[in-house]
Image (tube, rainbow, N blue to C red; front, side):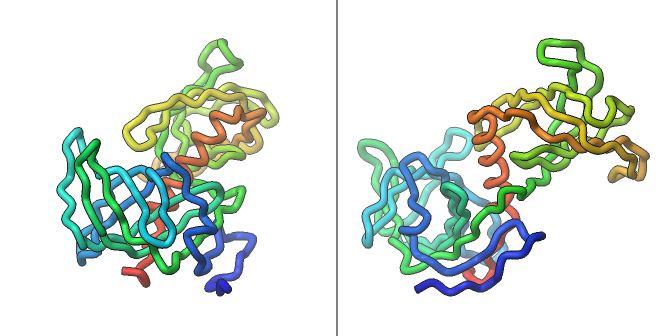
Length: 241
């Protein structure tokens, strides 16, 4: 039976509980982040799930950074962060075995339990993404701005100059980076709020809140992936270290 550590609230992005790896249902290709359990070590290595052999091991690709294979020793302990579906989780493990044939991969010890966070639909990722704002798809650019937070429902944009009116439909085009892959998101959006505030340099800027219209499944998955990355980065699970 699982036990809840934190009850969900309307404001919170997720709730946390103790569970089992079965509940997350990791699939081949899902991304995991490995962090060494050494004080002061914050580097996170991205690997991909190959398969899960309950209750023995989790098979993952060996980490590669800038094209170079990272040396991993057997018995090395790691804190693992993962996401799948609407869940973000973390667990402690260690390397059971490293293999280099037919390609480099690792056996990680199957965890007895994991910490699970379920993502709320409206959770937003704090980002810094340059976006072009057009009057319509294939139309002329009316402004450029910076997306400062993002969810599958919409975005908050900062711009040096005012643009648009409330309830106006615009078209956004911006680039996101997922792991080492860059993808473009292009979608229509409705302006829901316009205001002004100081940016990080104390300069007055226009702030526009937009709601995405008919977000494609592909774009929705890209944004969800970006939100996952943000949650994995921001959630330290210090009690597991």
